Length: 171
Length: 132
Image (tube, rainbow over all chains, first blue to last red; front, side, top):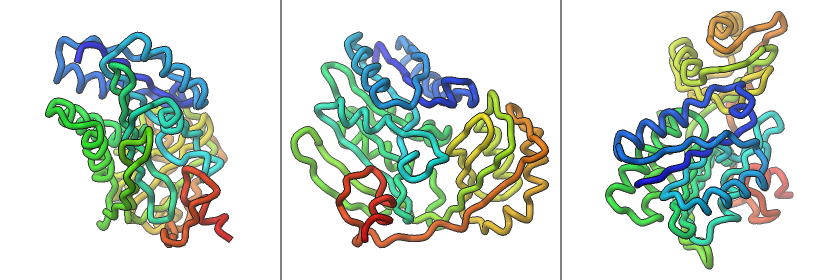
């Protein structure tokens, strides 16, 4: 792992309403495991599918080994007007040729989180949810799976399990 | 955890749908001024106060929306004043005079087998509502 881009998304991150704790956590985890890695946090994007899509496209041309998108992974505006717009997974669905995905739904039918893993040229692309604990757990699972040379399907599965474990299911 | 597995075709290598059977209520605090919010600290403070898992799911400059797991909405409503006082002390939040908490009822379970495939939408809840 030599070159990594971290791409946070969300109007609330971009305008400073919420501190971007996820990027710091993800960067810290990557550097701990890959001390020689060059990790760059890209300026946050607004929640617009085309904006996210085009940014992914331009970043992949720079040939990073890994691109991590943060936030925009739920159903968001599709089931609640008051929630933010979640477009990261739809942008990845459009962009990726080879991909694996896991969708976690609540028992009420709402999409809580969709994780997508895929590869474009030499770049592995993943997304993690915005809530800090979920982003942290997903990244830990990703790095473990990646270091053990899991397939894309199994990386996605491990990340989904880690996010699922953050929900107090059946307590 | 329930898996509904579907092997993908074409560009999709594989795809799984997972249903999380967790009880939660959505808590919305409005009448705030929010700037530079540390969501991790806010979650910790509320989890200590409510003794349950709380996740921030949406923030604007004026409101914060959170999921509170395994808690009765009445418990949140009864604690409204105390919760707003705590929020006002949290870094990045200023409570105004009109600050209030609204808490929905617990989420209602849908029957997944009866959710139509179409219209195509990323949210099964939306399809469930439109099923008739």
